[in-house]
Length: 216
Image (cartoon, rainbow, N blue to C red):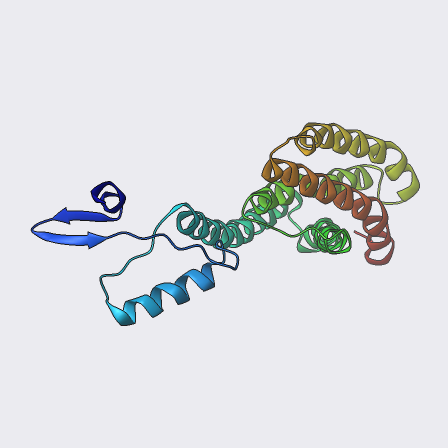
């Protein structure tokens, strides 16, 4: 009997503490459910605490998702500043950024169509997509300005091929993650590739249209 109880009882400072296991019928990683459970148990006794792998994983998931939002916003802010320092023009900065933002929106749309969700693993790739995807628009806009701002087809033909190859090699690197047996890494590779391809398509299709309309 003692062996059966030993793993559930702990003695410290002359008092006994009881440890028990809970097997939730719903998602144990749902942070809201875990907090609700802890609050309900706290009403019985404030000293009752819940812990375990699922609790730690849930808190880690929440922190990563919250921090990634701020990191992504900071990344965009840094990119806006750097691009402006490159062109010294608000108009050209906006022209180079808009296609990337549209590409990011397309990425979210493609993921929704494919039934893919952002999770605490693949969401970490979002700031990288922000940083790498902007290159396409910047390179194309530079070539457009070097050509005198008069020959968009020539710009896309020459620099377009370069950014396609650059994107392809980047996708090849991230694409290797797709074949990982660990779902987290696999989803990171999938999200990265979707983000890179949508950023590329937006740069090749949307950017020329903006250049035609706004005359950078």
